[in-house]
Structure formats: structure tokens, C-alpha cells
Amino acid sequence: KQEVTQIPAALSVPEGENLVLNCSFTDSAIYNLQWFRQDPGKGLTSLLLIQSSQREQTSGRLNASLDKSSGRSTLYIAASQPGDSATYLCAVRPGGGKSTFGDGTTLTVKP
Amino acid sequence: GAVVSQHPSRVICKSGTSVKIECRSLDFQATTMFWYRQFPKQSLMLMATSNEGSKATYEQGVEKDKFLINHASLTLSTLTVTSAHPEDSSFYICSARDRASGGQETQYFGPGTRLLVL
Image 1 (cartoon, rainbow over the protein chains, first blue to last red):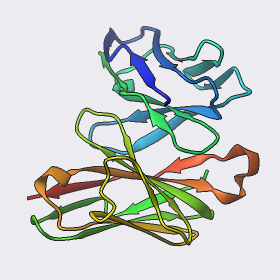
Image 2 (image 1 turned 120 degrees about the horizontal axis):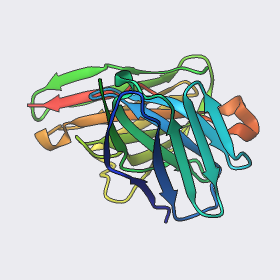
Image 3 (image 1 turned 180 degrees about the vertical axis):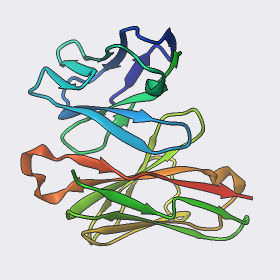
């Protein structure tokens, strides 16, 4: 059974800092890994999707990496802004299509 | 990109009533849709997998008679919470897999429905 762990559970940084969020998974036989952002009381916003054959994806200030062999993915946020404050979830999918979500990292960026 | 909608976005109901939540894929056909539930400050938990034209597959611990899922077409799946109770209050999110995505098998998530049972 796939288990997904996100560390840290919560993170508070001053504005402008670069930061890294971690996601680890126990079963490396994945189809893809996806990072989401969730604002309080809202649904999911897809940030980056990494296929199993890829090593990283970039979108603006965000960069996500994937190392299947070690069961790890990182989400790098450059020059953080208060608007980045949210909960960040990673989800791992096997070929069967059922995503397993981590518990999320709640990020607070202080002005 | 592909869009998945949910209706309603928010619903408040009395205990004992039934509530239907719709999940639609707006610009693609979805042979498979997934229903998730999220309690406050917790992650998403998969409730069931819905395949078009067949019975849904429920995860362990999810009551199929309480959470009725119907996937009658390639663009619509519905989740009905029957005889809702306050403990069913939660955030319900659906996702849909694009039939035409071939090897990509990308999933798209709906915006969620917040259910509050009084």
C-alpha cells in the first residue's frame, strides 16, 4: 500500500525566502506525481505534474523534482510571497489511477 | 486545460435529508471519476472509483448504501449522501480521468463541494 509523507507539516518563512517542501512515497512504481495548492476552504489547484519518466518540471517560481528510486519529490518555491501562503499537497498515482495524497504542508509567508 | 465542475459548491441541509453532488467534465470524456472526502485540516481520502456504465468501487470503510454513486454518462458522475448526519459534514472533491489522454492518463480535479449537515 502506497504511503505518502510530507515534511514539514507546517512552515513559516519571511517574504522573499526560497523554500523547499518535501514529499516522500514508499512505492516507487508510480505513474506520475502531482503537486497541488489548496487555499482554506477551497478546492485543489494543480501546480505541477511530473510523469514517472521525468525528473523535474518548472512553472514560474516553482520547480518540482522527482527521484523515483529514492521515493522523493521536492517542490522548490523561489522568492516566496505572502500570496504563496496555502497548504501544498502532493499526490502520487500508480498506473491504476487512484491517487494517494500526503497530509500537506501548510505554508505561511510573512510580509 | 480540461475543466471539471462540481455543483453545488456549498450546501447546508438538515440531518436526515439526502444531498446530491454533481461532477461534470466540461470539455472531455471521462470513463473514470474519483470521489474524495476531506475533513478539516486533513488530507484527501479516496471514497470510491466510478466507472461509466458500471458500479462504483468503494474503498474500505466507505458505506456504499450511504454514499450512492452514479456514473451514467461519460461527462457526469453524481454522489448522493443519503440520510445525511452532522458527521458527514465535509469537503467532497471529485476528479476525472481524460479518456482521450492516452498514455498521459491525466486527472483533473473539481473545485469541491462543502457540505454542512445541521
